[in-house]
Length: 273
Ligand code: JEK
Image (cartoon, rainbow, N blue to C red; front, side):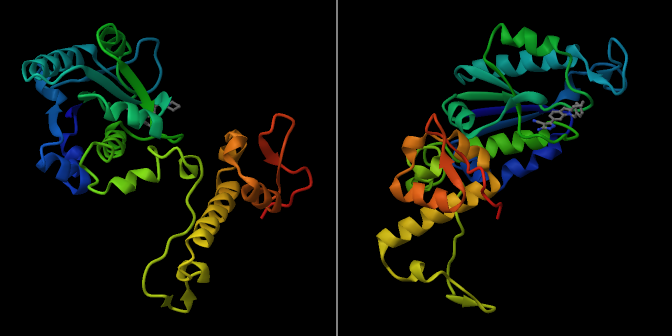
């Protein structure tokens, strides 16, 4: 997969040389190109921003440098035979970035990221490239960052670990997006490793029991408990067919019951824990 990133802070993308993404790069699975947008700003001050039409606070990134940069990046990538590009535009007003989109993007041969600063990029830039390529305007969460670079790191890490050969351990995928099973829709419960006792804290007996069936049930119960407490929205939106008899018992204990449509909601008199 080829990745291009156009930014006014190329050094912000240094973490792409580290860890999983860095290894994927070294192994040739990822071919990363980071570009300084100011290379396409031609005035004495390398200006990339201007005041917003209609007034208001802050500055907006200009069409000119972005258009020239993206034209050049596209020409270079096509020249190198990179395949069909998709543009990924981090923005606080984007579609929520999800694991499903990460899986989708991991199947593309070439991603071009446009992390902005200031109040974002003049909208005509995405409008223009959307006539030629798939454009994904994404937000990594409901908080306001100072720019899109951190979002590029987040999206890249989520995508890179899905690339064939990157994790090394095929099973590592089985827990999340690739598995049709339970962990796709629930938070995971707690995990433990040696030693069996640490500063007075033990490990739940069942995990030391060697009883695989009981371990699986315990993990499932903990996943339900944690999800009900921290992400009740995931329980409420889950397909009720995903809950077996034991799940339903656990959910009942946790104060959840099926409604008229079969989906689970909090029991009317449930006490929050
Ligand atoms: C890209 C510039 C900073 C800050 C205006 C927006 C409502 C008005 C732009 N999950 C995410 N949060 N933030 C970003 C993100 C932020 C960015 C850019 C991504 C480029 N900024 C900025 C404020 C505003 N406000 C919120 C009130 C616009 C992001 C992602 N992905």
